[in-house]
Image (cartoon, rainbow, N blue to C red; front, top):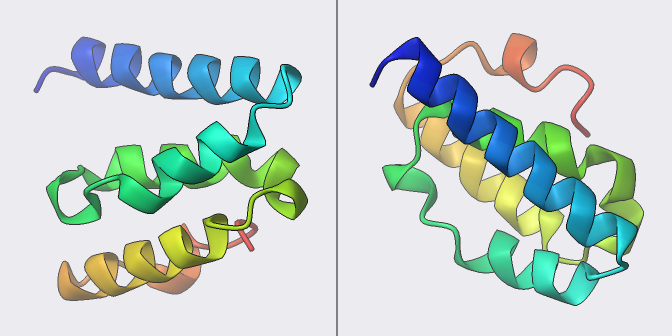
Length: 89
């Protein structure tokens, strides 16, 4: 995937989460967090979802479960978890 494609995908993630949060669609965001296929997602997208949902984390019941699944997947990928997850809790 090209950098431009990845950048566009991240923009879509941020815009989608932002607009859903502004419209108080937290149930829908929770549904998305619960059913995203983390193993199929590139690391950048996983971190994008975590970053985008950070401002509304207190309203998202399923974010912690997504974070746990993300942690497990990134551990399998041998990513630098302390660095990647810094500030995302």
